Image (cartoon, rainbow over all chains, first blue to last red; front, side, top):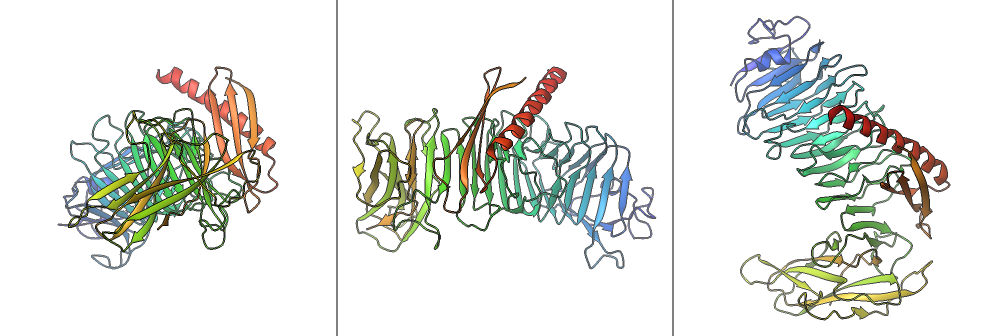
Length: 446
Length: 72
């Protein structure tokens, strides 16, 4: 495994890159000679700029990635990190391929009202790849309507198998028509949307209509997004999970734009522009789920200060057989074994007509097999699709029912016998179309 | 393509911190419906927000139509 040195100020791609004195001038120059496992060091003074498209195909593999690191050129090999930049101007894209780890590099892509997408982890062979960017900046400066950040291969094939990670990495988009288009999976843990972000039509979407994307977005500062920027395009399938993110002040953009397809679900947990820690927002083909702090059960779920329930609202798409709206999981640790347990969840809705066990039910996963961690599921859904539906049990707990005409309190309850210690994991399912219920999101176990 | 109807429906009640859930429903002349949900700040002018979004949605639709013409 070799070390390759790159410094734009005095390097030359005709040199062999073996020392700082013989440094390459460009990252592409280093990529032309690299081998799997090599380390490519970009000097702290490295600031290459090109008026030509840059396709940087690194020779790394998943097992032996190439490492591209901005570093201080006082030593060979360097002993401290730094920052460096790779820039294109005009309608010139940057494309990065091959399994690799990047540290401390700012990529500035294109300039002017032209198309210049920045594509990371572009798979150009049949092999899948992993690219990780740490302490980097991915900035598309061009303002053309196709100036996306593409996370993963835009090719028709090989775009599900790869994995892209951004760690403490910032991004910027400059066109209102663009987004972070995800091909395969993207894990973005830490970082920010930079100041000056365009008011994009959506921040994230699956790169292709027919292939679902997977996003895990954690611990992000999204406060620089324009206030009306929606986060996810729901018209393309995928699973989008955002957790512990700071949102823009006075944000009105919403979690999704468009009507969710059957294969779409977005979950936003504990994200807000205010000092809360209970926010929940789910958008799904079958409906939506939001946190609720007014219509709550007395003595029910709370974050310690604020009482909370979940407002589950189904669309006309919801149905018992293939599209119930499923809540996030609720968990309670269980120490007892070989003893009958009853798990109950309270619900509230505004109707004199009771919900039946074909319309709303509780599922609880528990460890029901001794000797193995095999999960079992207990449910108070009707026993079979042909069983006559029966009303769920009425409840006598107290709820705040502000604005309701006919508050109707019911409870969902299952009884089972766990055989192993472990978590009870509960989910409320709502299958009645165009219906709203409030769920006390704390299971009680007796 | 223009939006022929915009309906703003606030939740009947506010949340404990004073914010209120809002549903905006925009209907295009084609019949396409765009719904936007958000949690409005205390004192937010939801009509102004809806008007701004209407313009943005019409512009986005125009971009989308232009792209469809360009790229088939």
